[in-house]
Length: 150
Image (cartoon, rainbow, N blue to C red; front, top):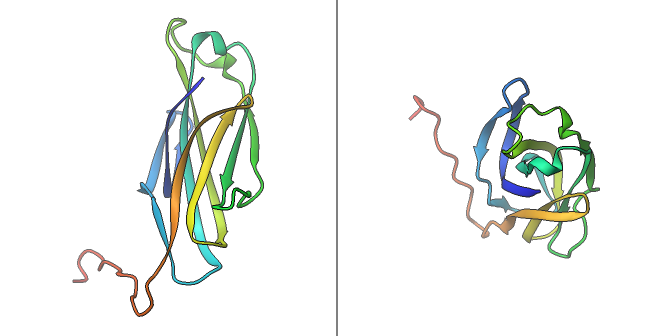
């Protein structure tokens, strides 16, 4: 089992029938925090797990944790299970499990690196981070004008 990829976005939605997804503002790496605690309305984790042919014959347990710079959990770990036994794929090729979670109302308590860690069956597969950064005093966030409103 391997993590094919993972990234953060403002929001994501799965198209179940096709195994594809939509992402809104993917590639979140920093979150400006003018004050603490900071409130993030929505933050999405997107990950894809590569399942080898010999790993398709049983149910797997996944866990997603988000760690604060202190090492403590930002919110409770999310546990889930997936069953790849029904995946139709050539027997000699890997198959994939798409893992998307939209977190609403995230409260950031401190500046620094926050890290999402995805594990499967007790083994960490990989991680992706974002940095909560202070906004220098007197500086306002730049908001780009909408198309047609320039």
